[in-house]
Image (cartoon, rainbow, N blue to C red; front, side):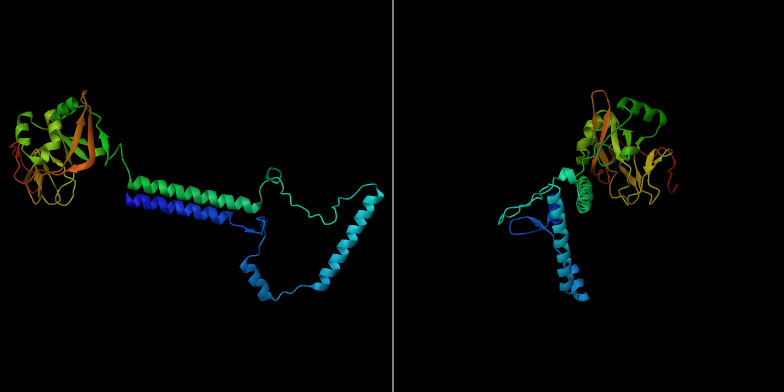
Length: 291
C-alpha cells in the first residue's frame, strides 16, 4: 500500500511540475505578460560583441517620423481624422480576442507537449497501479470458472480414468472418494478443501513441490509422476515417493447449487505432509518415471 501511495504522489508532483513549467512567464509590475530574452541569447550577444548602432537608430527614427507625418497629412487632406490621444493620457493595453486570433505556434506546441506528457504519465500510473493492486477475475492468479459442472467432471474422470485438466487454472480436478472424507477432515491442510470433497472433487496445482516442474498424469500407475526428479503422488496429490517434501498443493473451489465450479487460484493451499494417505491408493500399474 505504501508503494502505491508513493507512486501516486510522484505522478501528481510530475504533473504539477509540467503544468507550472508550461505556464511560467515573465511579468511586469502590474502582472502583464512580457517577453524576455533567454540567458543563452544574451550570452551569444555578449560573445559576438554586439553594440547599439546609435546613428542607424537615429536615421531610422527620423525616417519613421517622416512617414508618419506624410500619413497624417494625407488623412487630413482627405477629410479623415487620425486616431489621437489626449495629452498626458496613458494608452491602455487591450488584449486581443483569443477566439479571433486563435493560438500561437508556441501555445500549440506547449499544449501538445503537456497533453503528451499527461497521457504518458497517466498511462504509466494506471499500469503501475494495476500491476501492484490487481484483483483478477479471470485467468491464473484469480478466480477461474470451469467449463464443466461437477457431474460432468465426475463422469469424465470415471470414463477416461484420468483427471480433468483446467489450463487457465493450471490445475487438475480429480475425484475424491466420499467414504474417505472422515480421514481428510483430520488433515489440517485439507480444511479448505472439504466443501469440494463433499461434492466428490478436489483441485490439484500442477506444479511439483520439489523444484516446480509441471507434473503429468501417468495412465499406467494412476498417479501423478514428475519427470524431472521422480517425485510421485497419488490420485488426490498425496506424496508416494521421490524427493518432494510434501504432497501436491491444492486450490479451494466454490461450487454453486447448479454444480458449476470456480477455482480460486489467488491462494495456493499447501499440500499434505509426508505420510498422509487418506485414500490408501497404491500404484495400479507400472510407473511412467524410472520404471
